[in-house]
Image (cartoon, rainbow, N blue to C red):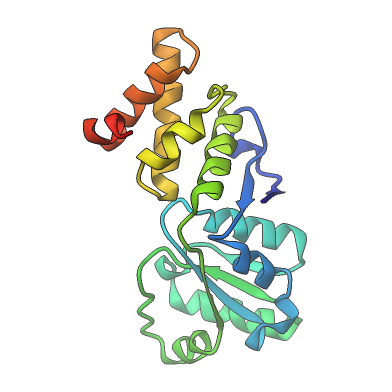
Length: 203
């Protein structure tokens, strides 16, 4: 399990933002490193909320010489079509991220080109990746989670990128509010606030 460091310090008050690489996104990482193999030099990246699509787009644009359009499914289709043409004319790869379940494209010329693009999808995090993500979010906040926090929290929480981020934010809030280090009592209260009391009591 590794991390890709990203030059986006504004996304975290203490540490530069990073992408934790694990089973949920390893295929995406490998595909971004091989953009010369993409059909028509184009890839579309989807995935769950807070799964790092925007960070991948920023990393790709900063480190590969390629172009990136974030949340392409919310943007003007004609502008995207022109951006695709520029990328093809100038010979660089283009990565587009999409935020929704499916990108319904109205413009026929754009639809045909995006239909031929490489389709990438970030999957859910497994246990190890969830633990690494939890520690990464805590590091960006300057929060010491406390020994054993991932081992306690991961089996009891929703296995999603957004839930992991919410849990860490709630632990940080409670720790600051109570002026206490993050120990099991705070982990439990944060878990109850985010997931409900049954999950907090889960053995």
